[in-house]
Image (cartoon, rainbow, N blue to C red; front, side, top):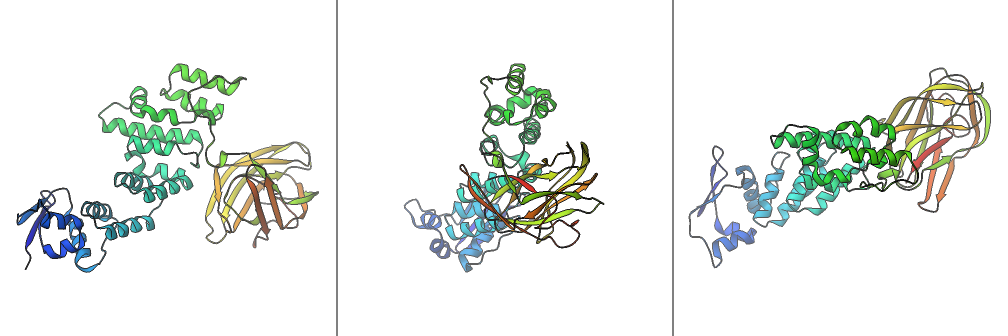
Length: 409
């Protein structure tokens, strides 16, 4: 008893789908205008080439029965169809589905779609996911498919959690892919051309001089004049004016802070391949960039060390680095840093873990279970330390290694 037919999609996937005008008009103002408005159509067959048949069927299912039937493959086309025919409840269902399935693997893909469909809330969630998982998001398939405007939106953010040299490398991969789309040879000159205004959003001054010399300076994307200016920026004072931002990103904003958990220093602490471990929890979001560790009691030497932060409940390694550090035989602590900032969420238990290879060292005693660190610029951060069960080389709240946690708010 249908009184209207729709020819939906394009060949070879075109389908003819029957429906009832009354049901469509009740559920959609667009259909109501189409059939009952001043410019009402009298056609019995309406062609809709820009809508996928599966999405149109999902729309009809919702209008007829309030049933939402969407999946990862159909959600974007269904969202487009719901917007086209002004069915806000189905729009919301699609957006909620996308939010639930948002991850670092699809954040850039969904960000592009959210901007295309004017979904600011979804776009904001995508950007937040990219901030928290920048490294993973940049290597996902969807990154090289984003348009230049979306790239600029991302590069403008102060909250990306990645070192600038790695961000520049990812942007170069985007530029090469963009050259291929435009049938251009991916030469440095053409990469610079497709990057256009986005190149100015790379914060080259945040790199170390070594990172700049080994990467961006040799890429060919920067002009000789820019390379010289940046080398001068790294090496002379007063620093010359440059055309690139030097505002820090993410955890590199503000001032580096150190929380210390011991009141006294002792000797000696030995190592036999077992990790020193201590559990900790904070009351607000921070980014840990490294640990301060005690060094040798036998004079100047060098330790091989692996450092990790482990999520206590899941066992997931949140950050890790295999490195070494020299020490001078004093009771000072020595900095060992992660390759990338490690996001620490509030009221969540983590384990700080270090595995040292080297001679006996100093250690801390009279440890504090609760330490509140306060700074003028970023306020208070409260750390709570607890015993990490299992093999921990003897480190505990009261004494042991890992005397300092280095972080930014």
